Length: 140
Image 1 (tube, one colour):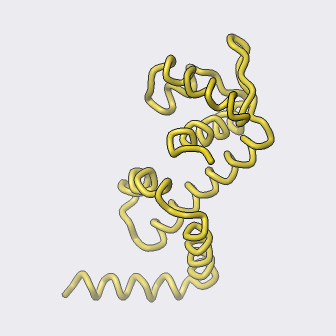
Image 2 (cartoon, one colour):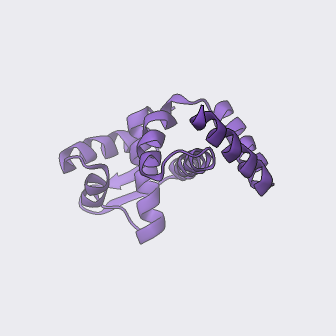
Image 3 (spheres, helix red, strand yellow):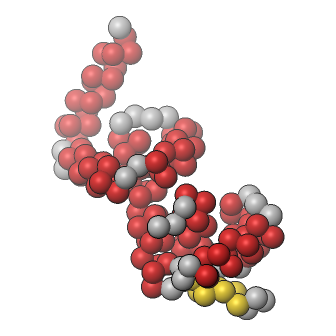
């Protein structure tokens, strides 16, 4: 299993490849706000652990294992953003909150949050009921 730090790199590499078709060390460093030398070290570790294939000066490619995990990590991040939005967390707080919790939840918890998101999305009335409860609680 990848560490939380490894997950951040895999997720970002996956996003870059999906968006641009490639991921360079400099792009990863910029996206994660770290030094390129830190990216190189992590990319070498991810290569060793078979999440990607890295060739110095030639770039990198995610392996099937890396793609599978990357896709799941992006799903987890997007799902948590959806969940926090549904439950009424302020938009300007959502990204940082997701970054703070995403590595600390089990995949079982993620699946249950997915069920809850689906529950609310199936009926707009459920979201309205939640908002009414929140408004009532704020008034107290």
